[in-house]
Image (cartoon, rainbow, N blue to C red; front, top):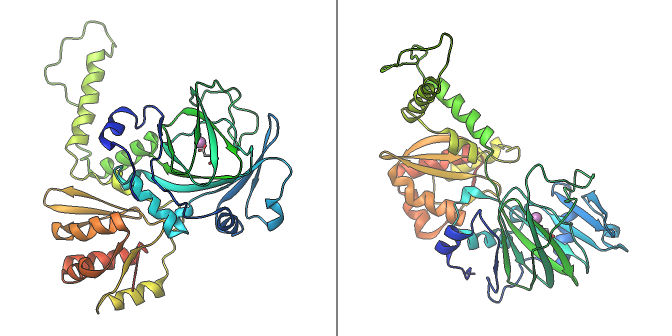
Length: 373
Ligand code: SIN
Ligand code: CO
């Protein structure tokens, strides 16, 4: 499966900036899951699902798990199932289409099914999304740019906009993609039954980034380091803190950040799993035993977060919020595991012959990040 897109041009002109309609983005697209399979997932306890029913200018929301009877309704409705990539391998493979964007920016693949007229209402999202049309057709209306001050209808859960100015309108068929940057209002309305695959992204909040960076910095900074003011200009008015003093203070902090010995906070924050990651001791012990012999398959467990950073001569590996250093020889294995979520054949044979790779696999096992067969 290949995305028909000039990715360089897209990143320069559209990513995070403006919507883009990509007609026939995935030629001959065969949706990897149909409405019945989606309904089956929405009946499971551990899978997050919602049904939104469309009234004239009013919408109602119900959370799953659902029963068979929930899927027959009089008013137009939409079923949305979150993180389908964690449960259906073929849906996870859709993320290969956006492999030109760093993996750690990816959130999940949400899949929706709607009957004729079904809609989740006019809204905006805080994150980028590629809306890939599966079966059937959906009309998309594009509206104004919004932010946290934009007026919403009273039902908080749904985050439906109080008003919508339609600037553009597109009808998407199977394989078409509509890219939406954060903050642009959009309103999709099913024309007949249809499914839509939302390849959704995420970005850390700046306040989380700041608090994590400061925490790491505080562990490294010498409490005997002080504010300095070489080249001070004479004080003119008693008690005054001048702009130049404040600028000097900011420069002192910037220098502390630049000279900090380690910068792990970003990787640790990005790879923190969004769910409680249960480590099953028995499975870890079995995996460690298997590592001593011949391996046939290593898989990244669904929902596990793995990233890395080249730093001096070594590699900082970030896995499920944990950071650890490895020699550069682990890189080919790591890239493959991050990209394909699996290791087998000659790539696995090469990794098995390298002690640093075996150490890293043992570490990832202990973090419940991979499974070994
Ligand atoms: C949908 O699939 O119906 C909604 C997706 C979105 O607007 O983000
Ligand atoms: Co949306």
